[in-house]
Image (cartoon, rainbow, N blue to C red; front, side, top):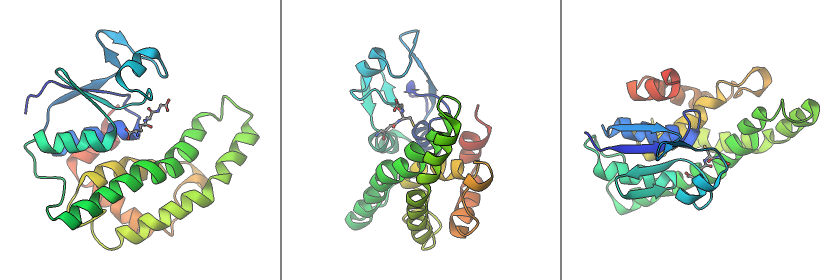
Amino acid sequence: MKQNIYIVGPQFSTFLRSVLLTCEEKQVDYEFGLNIDGQQIEFPSDKLKSIHPFAKVPVLIHGEFQLTESIAICHYLNDIGEGPSLTPDTPKEKARHLQWCSYIATYIDKALIRDYLVEFIKINENNQKTQIEKIKGAIPNRNYCLSLIEEQISKNKFVTSDHFTIADALLAPIVDYMFRLPGEFKIPEQYQAIKQYRNRILERNNAKKILKDAK
Ligand SMILES: N[C@@H](CCC(=O)N[C@@H](CS)C(=O)NCC(=O)O)C(=O)O
């Protein structure tokens, strides 16, 4: 569906990937990148702050309408897109689904991405030994979150049911990165349900495109 939607964010961003996955699942046409008004944006920068009060990505631009925060953006795309719904129907299931969206976008993102994955990027900037120690210090909390995900994902094919939802669009890029880390930092073998979940996710053409092939 031609919508003239632009998503501000770099391809490697987990939250940008969640939004793109939602676009793909909902058959919403989009472009993405770091260009606003013909100007390349940096982060952090005043330009980014002018479209996101906390200078974060992604930001959705749909004509005059601008929207921040991945959970809100994904719900908007779910409402305007033509593809099958990515949210449950009943009040309890809807609330449970939102609860998981929130867990993933806050605590799980912090433990697995901000305090762990992103710290690898700083290895060359900081003292290498100190940085490795810092990353190792984040492993217990990483494992705690992985155990919660493992337990949840053992119940159904996807996060809250046997259907792919926005919660999966949020979780899939995070989980995918956990399998790409080297050696001892990679997700341990014991998380078999998460491994199967990732395989299930990567069987979907949309996920293949966004998580694997996109540059
Ligand atoms: N609560 C925001 C978080 C977005 C976020 O943390 N985005 C990261 C990229 S994945 C970012 O902008 N990082 C840049 C920075 O923190 O300076 C959301 O759900 O969209």
